[in-house]
Image (cartoon, rainbow, N blue to C red; front, top):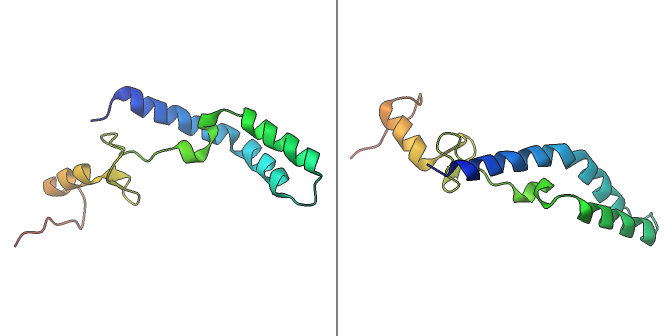
Length: 101
């Protein structure tokens, strides 16, 4: 089980990303528009740099919804391999059968 502080930090980052997503997209649009003047693009890049770092989507990290584990995460199931194995062994996941030979 991951520390509660790490899980809460990730939730806080997620909220910031959602809050600033539109603003970031608008500023990036200005920065990448070659028809705009250099000064205008530079001002937009400065405004983008002033936004909180944690509002960037690249700072998010996928975590297991059951345990909070950040590694060995299956995107489709939104859980780690360990949680998947435990639930599969208990028969909680339909269609999943533990292999044995």
